[in-house]
Length: 102
Image (cartoon, rainbow, N blue to C red; front, side, top):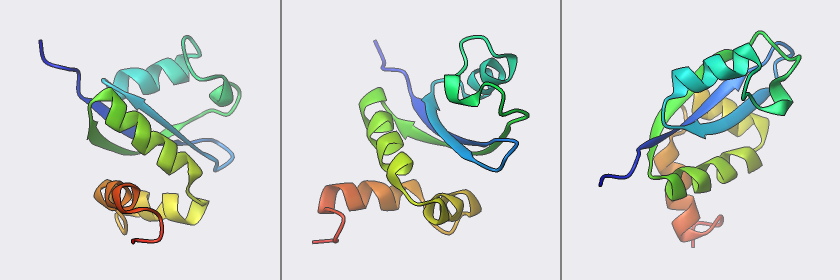
C-alpha cells in the first residue's frame, strides 16, 4: 500500500499573519479552515484566509519535519518561500547539514 503524499501549505490571515500546515488535500483542508469545522483553532476569527503557498513535501514524517522548520522561520524567510526566493529543498538541505551548513 502506497503512503499518502503530503503537501506543506501556508495561508495568509486577514491581519496578515501566516499559518503553516500539512495536508494530503490542501484545497479541502483550506476549505475546512474557512468553514470553521475541523479547522485550526488559531485561524478561528482570523478570516478571510488566502492560500499563498503549497508544495508537495513527501510522506507524513518528511512533511511534519518541514512544517516544524517553516514554523520556526522568521517572517521574512516565510515570505521568501512564498515569493519563490527560497524553496523547500533548501530547508531539507539545511536540516541534513545543520543550520550552519556544516
